[in-house]
Amino acid sequence: MQEMTYRITDELMLLAFENHDNCVSCGYDFKEGDTSYLGYNNSKKPLYVCNKCSNQLSEIAVRHYFSVRPYEIPQNDTKLWRYMDFTKYVSLLSKSGLYFARANTFEDTFEGAKGLKTNKKKWNEHYLSFFKTAIKTPPEGYKCDKSEKVIEEQAYKLLSDLETGGEASKKRTFISCWHENEHESEAMWRLYSSYIENTVAVRTTFKKLYLALGRNPSINIGRVRYLDLKKGYAGVNQSFWRKRKSFEHEKEVRAIISDHKTTELGITIPCDLSMLIEEVFVSPSSPSWITNLVNDVNNKYGLSIKISSSELNEEPFY
Image 1: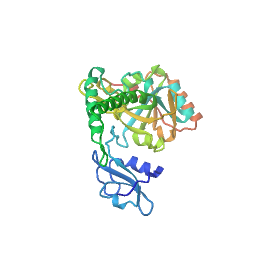
Image 2: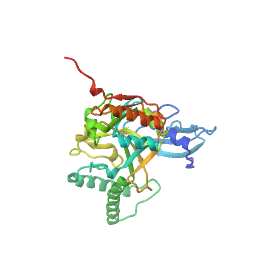
Image 3: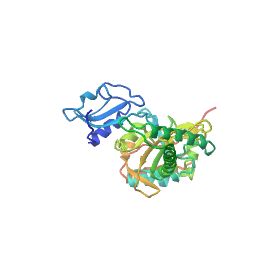
Image 4: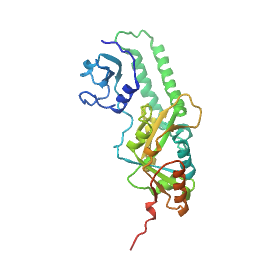
């Protein structure tokens, strides 16, 4: 078996990130547990391929155990909205960057949670059994010569590490939240504004958000899935992509990045605002001068963006 070189270039990382679910050679749809290969052919071209096509690689950078993404990726033209007060909008423009808040600063105490505390016993039992089995059945070529007592102790240690890691991940996970909708949402105007009359909504699309953030493979963008935690759990790698059913009205799409070094409450990621912002809508409760102010600020930062009044202000007839 050809040895792995672990030579991962930015181009190879991006190729694997953007084609995560499919072999770039034959189009095969990867299944959970498949082996995927990252490497280069004789012409030094990067490839991300399945087992059948791995013979095309003259260099195998790494073999991966394929896992399905813990989130669903929207269609490119999916409309996304970010509701914010005017000061945050000015900050967005002045910093030319998108703010990602640290997960443990969110009001929802369940952010990053795996489940309900009342159901933790079942969770612990499942993972203790899983860890014991893993210790007893090492990879081919290795032998487990540990006593039952040692296996038990190591399994409990791994369970403890799993919980500690879950708490720590809230401090190194940073999130930018967006609302998926074809139209404005009256509920979102109220939910995400401190003062509704001074609020704007930025509209973009999934593709524009991805491109504006520089096609960065370190940033994952996808839909949140809503769970009934009385009946289930969020998986170990799913917790920041799962929320309780009571938040389903948010229809959230989020961008997530991990940073193990920063101690700040949030980080700003450089963003091409001319690419990102498709249109800006002014709150339905805003006075008319707010529209002029938003336009003046855009001009100050050299952005030509369409400014629209909220569609909720349109007049009916009877």
